[in-house]
Amino acid sequence: MGTPELSLGGKVAIITGSSGGIGRTLALGFAEAGASVVLVARTAAELEAAADQIRAKGGKALAVPTDVTDGARVSEMVARAVKEFGRIDVLVNCAGGANYMPLLDMGQEVWGETLALNITGVYLCSRAAGRVMVEQKSGSIINFSSAVATAVVANMVHYSAAKAAVNQFTRVLAAEWGPYNIRVNAISPGLTDTSHTREVMGPDLFELYAKAVPLGRAGQPEDILGVAIFLASDVSSYISGAIIPVSGGPQ
Image (cartoon, rainbow, N blue to C red; front, side):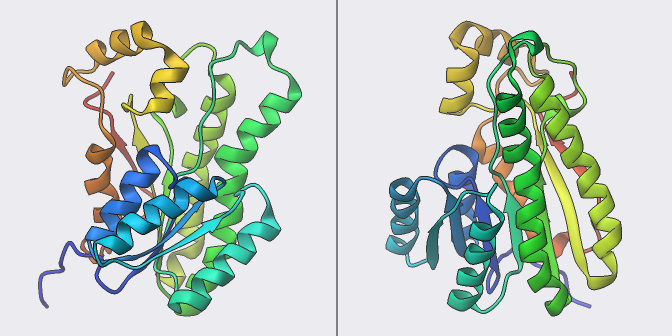
């Protein structure tokens, strides 16, 4: 038995939330690791720009503007991916996010939108891509959780609840789809330096939280890329149901 390679050569990966931030970094990194990448987000222009960047380096990319909270659109996206590349080996559910908001100021619309983006989108994309993976008898699903799924952060009850749901969704689906040789894992980032995070937190709060990280800094999207490639590759073929923190140390 040979040593498995940390490579994505020949694999087809769908990455949601890939128009910017962590998702875009993953899309570019997966392509450099050899994957054909399907980029998914709501913003068409930014998706096409990222796809063009991949193609300019000789990679294969398909941009499919999609609202991951819309089941019909998600099914169409997966069908396009299969038509273009013939299979789906990896699904990365990276789309998500929320703003700070006290519960007493939170209308039901905000609550519903936050859960739709952060957990319903994971369900819809996993279900649609999973149908393909079950037929193939293979696949790797990588969900994005967050440190706030277990840490207590005031004014983030909506986001915390959604990400806690992602954790349990990951564990249960790993058990349910294990017999089909489909692995389901989650990455749980801590404070990560993206334009959205800085905008939501503001510079003072961001720096305060960054100094509290044991490694002394906020994470960069590139810090998450290696873990994602590991989970997508055959090197991690016996890992399923894991929630892997990428947070610079316990806090």
